[in-house]
Amino acid sequence: MLHTKPPVAPTYPVVPECGQIPLRGDPMTGDRYYSREFAQAEWDRMWTRVWHVGGRLAQLEEAGDYIVHNFLKESVVMMRQEDGSVRAFYNSCQHRGNKLAWTESGGVTDGLRCSYHGWLWGLDGVLRDVQDPDDFAGGSPCGKLKLKEVPCDTWGGFIWYSMDPQAKPLLDYLHPIPDLLAGRGMDDLVRVVWRTVKVNTNWKFSPDNFNESYHLPTVHPQMRQMIDEDYRNTTFDMFPNGHNRMIEQGQPSMRADFPNMVEPVWEMMLADWDLDPKAFQGRSREGRRALQEAKRRLGAERGYGYFDAMLDDELTDYFHHTLFPNVTMTGTPDGLHFFRTEPLASDPEWCTFDYWYLVPRMEGREEVATVYGMRPYEEAEHEVSTYGEGVGGHHLGDFIDQDLSVAVAQQQGFHSRGYSDPHLSGQESRVRRFHEVLNDYLEGRR
Ligand code: FES
Ligand SMILES: [Fe+2]
Image (tube, rainbow, N blue to C red; front, side, top):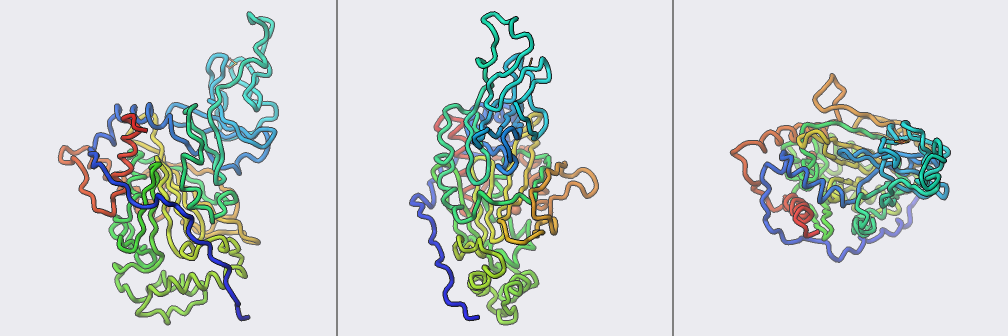
């Protein structure tokens, strides 16, 4: 069938402030990765003021369903309301402080009942039932006391909360990231991988690492057949709110063993879309445009209806969005990789690293390719492990293991008296930018 005209490709969202922001050159000494005082300042002045991802909206199907997010020593419970909205409360009983919800998720009908003296807190956080209501001076506290509520909102199918009562609205805080991800059907993505691994490194390794692609040739040599990490072909953006973006083109790198030749991974990617790999020998990078065209042409009939809302470049390229402070969302043609680190309460030299893989819905599909092979096309269970422990249990998949191995080694190097400040290339500017935004929080400029 002769295909007449591909759907009109949307244009890039207009983000006037896209581009570079001058750096001050703040030092990034090793102690910010292990000092307890620095970690305490991060808690006091940054973590308690930013928006956090609490979970996925898909986890809260019905009124009374709740999830718990523990962060350092704090704990927040997010609960679906009768009207469908979500509200968040500190996970602490207003009677005598007992932690209310102990499991990561759950469902209740009438509210959360405290395990100490049995007080019942309704879905809206209002006290419903107490033992011996007549025994309180001033009468029964029911209907009068309420759990302490925190700002809570949703965007992109994620539930967000902030511990700052004065937090700016979520969409203002995230700007312009929601615009940049507008074509990806974020609300409907299915989380087919949900993993958490404890890693012996400070949480900042992740924003540092995802803010540059300079490490790809060394750490991920297998990617050079299909990802062009060359800074001259990469788009780098910084945004006033502290978020960054980096777009890598989906094509063989000129650092590949035979850069103009079609190597096995690229060959497979071309063949998947009915392109003849042989036709691209000697000019392998022209496969990128050809892939975009083929995906436009064949996407709908193969079930990729979601391509219609995506830009041509989004059909081949890798869009890394580093959201201040600790979340990276990498959009690919097939789905969204979500990476996040959070500090562990016991030690600033440990963090949890979350890896979620979220994919668009496709009619009739039962399985989806992930870094762990084929997985069922459904909401995943949470898998938790410790990096470097156990046999086989700690693996997070090729490219993530590669990043984590460096993270652990770098954490050790930060302790050396021989290390003072990084010597950054231009393409690593967003690494220092991240630390400067962090310093803005710590030093009262944000
Ligand atoms: S501490 Fe919760 S009912 Fe007493
Ligand atoms: Fe990496």
